[in-house]
Amino acid sequence: SPILLWFRRDFRLSDHPALAEAARQGRPVIPVCILDEVVEGYGAAPKWRWGEAVAHFSKTLQALGSRLILRRGRALGVLQQLVQETGAGDVWWTRAYDPDAIARDTDVKSTLQGSDIVARSFPGLVLFEPWTVTTKAGGFFKVYSPMWRAVRGTDVPVPDPAPRSLMSPANWPVSDHLDTWALGAAMNRGAGVLAQFACVGEGRAHDRLTTFLAARVDDYAKNRDFPSMDATSRLSENLAWGEIGPRTIWHAGQRVLQEGRQGAEKFLKELVWREFAHHLIYHTPHIVTDNWRPEWDSFPWSEEEDVDVLRWKQGRTGIPLVDAAMRELYVTGTMHNRGRMIVGSYLTKHMMTHWRIGQRWFQDCLIDWDPAANAMGWQWVAGSGPDAAPYFRVFNPETQASKFDGDRTYINTFVAELSPQPSPQGLAFYQACPQGWALCPSDLYPNPVVELAEGRRRALDAYAARE
Ligand code: FAD
Image 1 (cartoon, protein in one colour):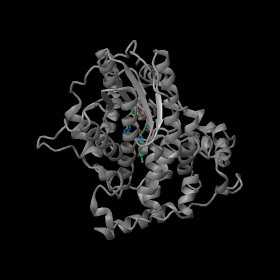
Image 2: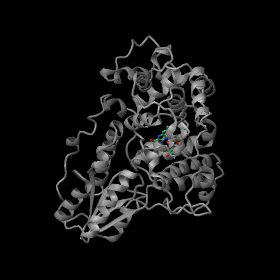
Image 3: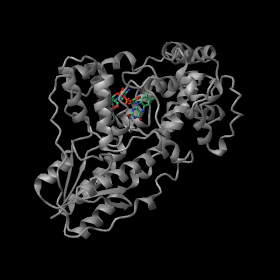
Image 4: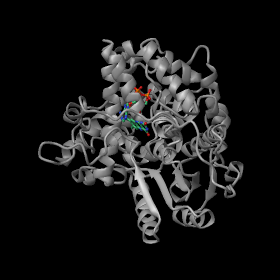
């Protein structure tokens, strides 16, 4: 009987354990993708980017003589319907560890198994299953560095190659047309803007990895903090949609390291930060919604979406480095890691605004949105998370700008009204803004929402009062 292979955020052929096993079994395979209750909850840019991944992967499967069947509705109901239509005996997928996915998948698994369907989940999202990496005492790691030391020498399975062919079923079930899903509908900034910056598909993800390891990995540790430099891999976008697997990246990095190119170690360490985030979301799912450390619950963060928050979202806080990063996010769908830390610190410390507001905005804007990395990142910046930046470490955006954007290339690129020669990206921001934003004329740069010294003092006072 056929296997229904359910693709969610794992749009690749190689390094895909479930797909490799399905091809090995020599049974008909029906690849399926569902616009389900979890995807319906995605923010605007992730939803659009998910659709780009689906469109591309659909073509990839066609080239293999197969198809991607698209359906819309609650995952369980759609899968039950497809089982009935196709006579499939198995439903397989790649495991995910965030609470929304776990709730959906647990329901699917128990119901299908109750009707004698083999419901089977496979690894592939992370390097190590979250329950296999433990401290000496047997618990999960709450601090990153010991976790890195525990996993750095561990064997990671060699990734499976892409199957050369997949057996088709006797009859294909009908499929929705992707266009009818209108996945870009919520993008009032216009998908056309992000489309220039997105890098979609497995082939391009592999090219990114190859180019990075050939040209940039040696200077990665030195340059990775400079937002105007093209110094990092940018693979988070492809990892988020599973267009490349972490095992592939791990083995490629290890090979380069063995050639004596030490820069690769720092890169592999970053990949383990991703791992850390996924393990944390599995063991402590409240990281998505609540302070990871409950002692922060009494902290006087504002949760009001007021005009100051709107100015933060618009990149009009009056703090040039914060604004550059916020506009980079809006225009390109991504933001340099240093920018993420700086805008997060300004929001949660200078502006004393709850990290959840920032988390939600990133969830709406990022094309590399990942529920685990985003939650961990925000709680790290805010100070309420595991292994977090101490609250009293308030990033000073001016000092950060002189250290990491000394010649103001990054600020000039994204803040048109501060730049002697506005760049296409800087101007694109004005074209991308939704009408409701009512921006000031582009030659007027605003005064700070919160002055740096005052904001810092206020945050530290609140912190001291809490103790
Ligand atoms: P590289 O420097 O090339 O690193 C290689 C890979 O390591 C990345 O692709 C990523 O998968 C992983 N990685 C690197 N840094 C981190 C980190 N701090 N945490 C977890 N994984 C990491 N990353 C996301 O993928 N999705 C998110 O939604 C996300 N939200 C964030 C929110 C905040 C507030 C902060 C501070 C960080 C967030 N990050 C998120 C982490 C990080 O900023 C991005 O992974 C990184 O900028 C991606 O660029 P890159 O692929 O060039 O990374």
